[in-house]
Every structure is written in structure tokens, then in C-alpha cells.
Length: 196
Image (cartoon, rainbow, N blue to C red; front, side, top):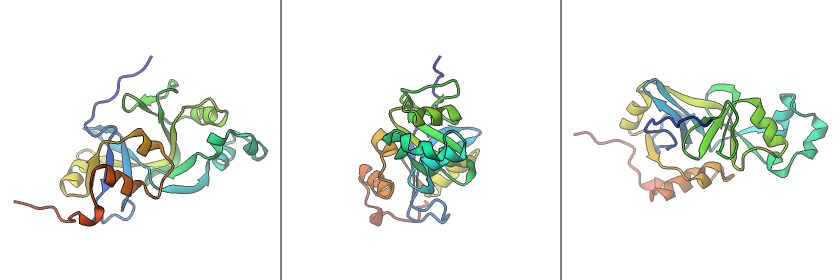
């Protein structure tokens, strides 16, 4: 049975770091928000790669042997591992299309889910996983009310995502492409917020 999508107003939105972002971990980052509530916010940086490749991760987890790497479907061999954020960097999360669901899958929006169990990695490795997937190690998290303060301080822009921008492999150009989708030239953004 499919669970109901949580309705936090930032759920399923992109956060784009403003040019004046002082926290280097988030400078020029695009974050996809998965959970936003009164308890806090959780999301994944989607435009920063890990130095680890997916087949190597499967070997480290004991899901396949080094010799089996060559047998992986092309889609699995080419799946990029992203640096999802500074929290729990050894924990993996998969954002994916809703054509794949297991008991542990959590709907984020009507067509994007999140699964953080090994069965989705196994399914991707044997070619039975979701049509679209994004794998991240770690996540970005904010305490209750913290992201709202940062948005009010002009640290982040909020942008509705497209699945193409969320799942495509153009990591290096993603920040500029999301800005362009919003009709914004990053060079023309003002760093300081105005106050009356």
C-alpha cells in the first residue's frame, strides 16, 4: 500500500545556494528537499560527486564481487554516487521514480520516492530497479525553523524542480541550469538582503 506524501511546503523543492553563501560546504550547491516539517528539514546535495563509483560501493557492501562488476547492466555501472551532505556521510539514500517501491520506500512527491535500504541497490545492480535513480551518501539537515531563518537571510533560493534536472547526469552544470530555469543570471544576484 502506497503511503501518503508528506506535505511540508519545501518537500520536493530545490534549494539553491545564493552567491553570498558563507558555508563552503553549500557554496554553489543545489539541494533537493525530501522532508520539511516543524521538526526540521532534510535534503540531498545533488550536484557534488563522491570519488566512489557505484560498482565499487556494491563490492564494499558485499552485494557483488569485484569479478561481477563487469556483469552489471550499463545503467548500474554508470550510476553516479553523489555527496548528499555533511550528515551521516556513510549512510546511503536513493531518490527514485515511483515505478519501484518496497516496504521501506517513502514518497517525497507524487512521482519521486526515497529508499534507504540495500534492496534498492540490489535491484539496481540486477537491472530491476527504478527507471530513474539518484544515489547519495550523507544528507543535509536543519533543525526546526533553521532553514526558514536561512531563507529569510537570503542564503537560499527556492525553485520547483523538474525530474530531468533532478535525475540527469550533468553534475557540473546543474547549478547554472537550475538558475536558468528560474530565469536568473547568477552574476546579477544581489548578495545582501534588503531590510525596511
